[in-house]
Length: 390
Image (tube, rainbow, N blue to C red):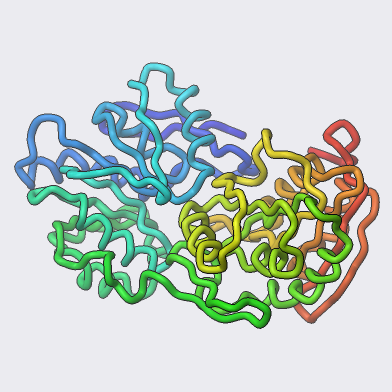
């Protein structure tokens, strides 16, 4: 990791992107433009003193630390922010300490005079966020929403106009855009687009999810390739075996596993808190019970598992590759029992069969399709045993 310096009106921040490769920095021009727009926005709105400030979906701490003087409240969907924020706070020891980080399992309460928001890529998640912000924004409050132009969701103008009052669209700078908004009338309660889902044979109810969750409206084609192998894998497990649905999304893999063998200790883990809220809803509807981990990967304190199910993400923001999968493979190897197994599906072009051999002594191809391959990996290598680990 290499620290880069973000210039702000009040000085500069040293920031690193934990887990990022060469050339990946922890901030972009949208962060820079948002921070530069805060004081002019407050002055234009006639908001004086120390406004109660909310930062939404900061990426690696640039906004939260850049606004540390405002003592902001923080809320983010991603559990990854916590580690990045802690790391980057340590690189800037002179800043005021930040308060706790909230997520969508337990969001903060308003009212807020100023909201600084990173615009997400998904139009539906943006629409949900803006409706939720209407419930916590002060009457004279302002939303500063910013992002890189190439990453703004389709129909973003319509999404803003359908939820809030757009007061100004600031001039673009370095291919970044910031929108200034006031509170609108649209609310999240009763919004028909909040929950989307689909039915799967073998489950007696629809699997639903909130907007930030991957593949919430239809079954992901990679997941579809993995489904036939779940029942045989579960049939080999004894009663009381521990099973994890890792990077679970709406929980489809774990829910189907539990429908095959109900007498197991099932766990779900996902970096998205909206995924956790969605899994909890789906478990309740199914009458099943499980442990939920809002975690970037597998928590250090998690127990060892007999089976881990995984459809690993292959993109993070604008970065596409196997870096997330490699991190997850390492975590799986460290959290499997000696006889435990990993059952996963991956994009064929990412060559997971080679990567898996770094962390597992035995890798077997179980199925294949033009774009996806299903693997079972066993004989996990612990940290001291891993071959070729960087």
